[in-house]
Image (cartoon, rainbow, N blue to C red; front, top):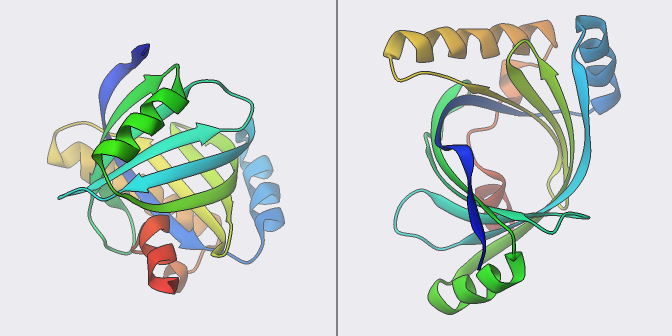
Length: 182
């Protein structure tokens, strides 16, 4: 099995997620702000039961490689800290077969993700099967609390700039939301 680590195996990020009604409005605002369009991707995330945090295998339609992602994140509304570990796997099916033998699969999340970049923030416009439309902001941050706080403020300002109501902020992951519907 061929496993490659990303240039940075461990990622310290801040993120924010909100439910939205209209991606077109956000696309227009992002264009006005000068955001760079990265692309649109069909992603399938297979989550596994783990004692702490979340573990998922992400496959992207049309790509042979997959990503194994483990992350720990607070379940709070608004900008939150996220510590993630990421492995890029060349033979995704082999790893999926092994993981299914070792761990119990939890849930599968299918989504269409449109990605933009704006001043160091990655913006995801997600349409998640059975859950609806969302926007997510992710931003790499440093280890110092002052850096985390500064980057959380950047996400909060972007939320306001994009006219996303604080009432629409989401505390849970897509896997948690989908599990709640079962």
